Image 1: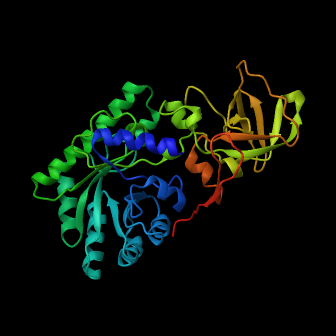
Image 2 (image 1 turned 30 degrees about the vertical axis):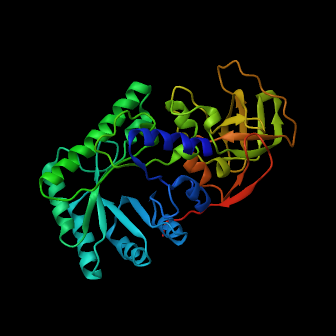
Image 3 (image 1 turned 90 degrees about the vertical axis):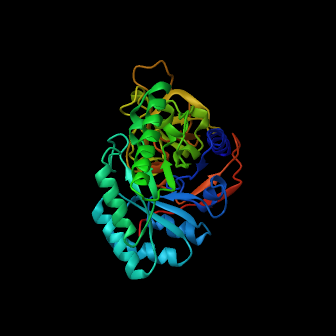
Length: 361
């Protein structure tokens, strides 16, 4: 984890932009303090529950990076009144009007960023839609604060190869810079130009015009990121420690006490060239066995097999032996647990236990 954080920080330093880590992956104050550039942030969150937890721990500079619903604005105002500089994200005039109205009623300007659609992956305003951008910006200025523009290259998760990832990063950069230029030419302030995804953060070669990068899963990495080519297996910093509880030797199965309640049902590698099932199996020290995966999962049972069609060999594991399972999606797997047991390298000595939280509010 420490190496992963240092790697991205050094990269962004060379590109001349700041890091605003997305804390939705870890949902842990202990992890946040190690990845943020200061105890006060900056930070990105995906729920108001996260915003409240991190604000209570002293984080002040926060972006709530999910489209704002008007019903959540009282909670936003409450957190801001408690000292957090919490900004919201939106992509419609209706949302902007709601934020401006709530700001006027509260006698304070809620800051907001306009989400830009850089790749058709999910939400946001097309950077070429100048009229809509300006309408949203002016609706915000009627009481709230236009803080800038923001985008997320979610399409990068399906890109393959360094050249494709560089193209995703450039499309991400170009989209927000174009949108920011449009707003500025209309006389609207746009101090923040924010991009963010782990694949593009590790492949961008030029971030001219960008002020900050948001990324989250880079802290732990996972099998999806390894499949994209952003990391190696040895970079994955989170795993589920499971115990062998049975065998079905005629079927080539080893049973462990970690099913989908421990691993999650995320199958993010299914569409990648190498399907990792519900997770890649390692020995207790974290070294992967060749082509050994959790091929199926029940609520509390994981079924370990050799990957179909491979040359892997089922290891001789006895009842009570332990294995580490690397996750497809770090965010989904860690969400199944209340804390992290912290070890260093291949050591099995637990140095600390870091609590994590869930929920939305």
